[in-house]
Length: 269
Image (cartoon, rainbow, N blue to C red; front, side):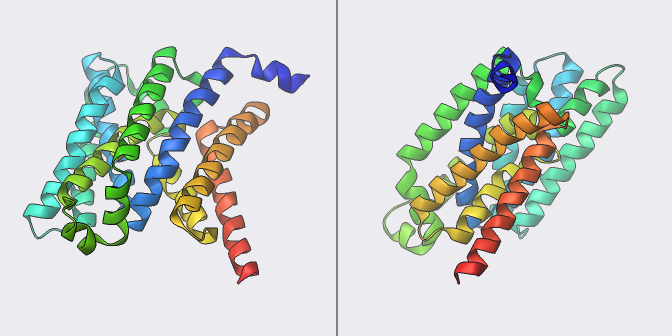
């Protein structure tokens, strides 16, 4: 009975709905990023989102409306730095990440009242998600899923055999732009759930867990999505009843599933 009452709370329903959408896109994009050795871009863009959210709060604007275009532009900047200079991808991520963090710290120091709001974005709180954020999460998640559907074979080919993909006419640079842009939007959406400090875990953990036990890419998508959704639903439930931070609880559950996946792999070898 207590569990049924728990499901009747509007804020829990909103958390489940938005959290499930975000979990789904994180799990799918995470596979492409991990296999292409681009998983660190999620961490770098989450740091950029810190500066972007701080700018939104500083200007008195809705943070996500400011953060999404800025983080998308930052993802393009990472690609350009890696492409046009002799700076490798991870170093380019580090450069842009440092700029984002330092900008956020400066804006926070100049502010007189939004530090508390900024702190909530650092560690996330999906239980306080607003109606606007739920609608935004659903709409953007649908756009991301549709984009992945239309570019699936291009993303798949570029992920597993880049040279072959080039011979078939696939523009690798365009695929990279699409992938990083989708990741940027996903990172901003996930900030509310896990916080700036932990958002990259939502992208990495389900993917690496699925790859431990899957025998193919499509099964990996299903397993990754299942792990991600289970972590979010169980994490929100556990955080409510045990009075724990939702974002951190979700990440700990992802860690638990990763350990299970490694154990299963060792047992079945």
